Image (cartoon, rainbow, N blue to C red; front, side, top):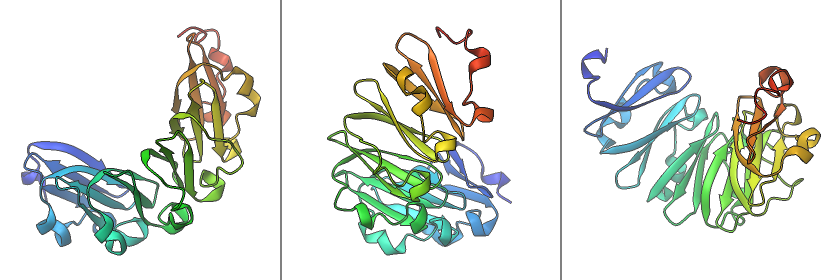
Length: 253
């Protein structure tokens, strides 16, 4: 029971089976399935001013005030970072797929761990990962925007980890469904890759994707708002990819 401890909670994160809460003093309380993040007793002594918690489906990672990282939960989901622990210093941000973590360090380099197929192994793109500004994730892959506006992707090739088929330069922002990525370029156009049925193929609406201001996503579809206020959607029709029934209502949002 943790009920008496849950006071002055600053943030709560959740795996599929457990919760973790940051308290006002920077300590962490977790509960739920002990195998998948509900038991943090093995690392309790290491919690010192936790700043941020990220999660996969079955593990947590916590960034401390000194930039180091603590992980717990199922090792197959990123709960064991011992292989890269010496590299996890000056960490600024952590992103996650369903079973892997990617940490951006202060110098813009990236450290990954967890399920290698779903992004936990970035060794194949290590030489391409220069200074990273931002990382976005599907459930199975990562995509990093570099300072020069290019993008490097890794993880499962079918669900966003392979961007070799598209040209990614001058990228301003990336959004993701569970299975695909969409990148807004500085000229307002959009490039997509990943599972074609769930947003990775925007060919049917490509001519409409001009002057895009922002993109939002469901698990399986994208919606782009254009500069004039209209909206363009694509991806799985049953999950938001088909907006024809409300087209007149969202013509000028």
